[in-house]
Length: 181
Image 1 (cartoon, rainbow, N blue to C red):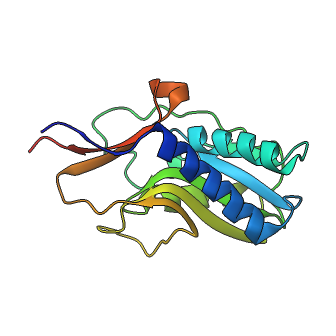
Image 2 (tube, rainbow, N blue to C red):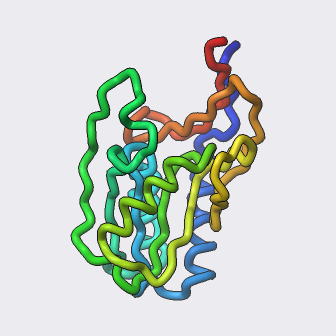
């Protein structure tokens, strides 16, 4: 089965813009807010958000970090491939900050749980909100729900949703693909 394109470049950009405006509307200024992207794919979304937020608000900076969750995952020892950690770049304490945890696709909730565990090693935030580009909604294994969602995609077992970013894949789009039986 060929991949089905759910979101193309123009709608993709509008989705990023909408999420930026939602965040600004909810927060006012971003002074006490920290954006934290989850490695590996959430960082592309987080970098794009940060760039757009700074452009829209005219602010000079917003606290931003990238968090590796490799060894916080509950399945890292059971994978067929050896886990290779990514970098964590969080040069600030999250203590008493309003953190927005950012990932590309929310499916079972296990990556977000790992992200929360990893985040708490850097302090106790005032609050943590979750922003995802795609929420698959069904097949959640943990009671985790996003606060900000770019697009809801209802998919079946045997399907995969992937977000492709210009920075890494050469194109901005969201695809629905059938996995091998």
